[in-house]
Image 1: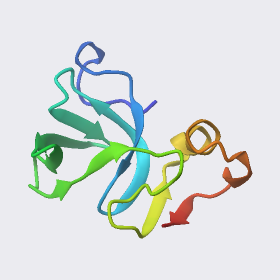
Image 2: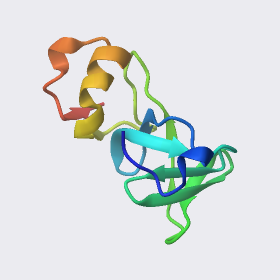
Image 3: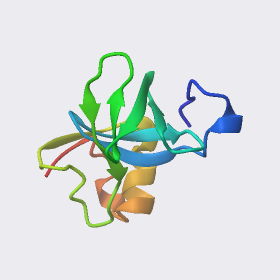
Length: 106
């Protein structure tokens, strides 16, 4: 599980989510209120049901992965973080034959 920058007292268990722009599937951590999100050194704050990087102001979209795929807002290439690849293909998509895939195009 990826460590967040917040103490574990304030963060729910990390969830596998898709992150838009560029497309990524990785483990994110939400603050207890859900207004902050942490991923790979990025801290985001919610804005109109989505997020922006508190340092750069860049906007990004986060939502849960879908069993049927369609894990990008507008389609395109999606990279799957190594640490969640098995969970994504085995538990979420239920497609163990695809577990070797690190990049998908939708």
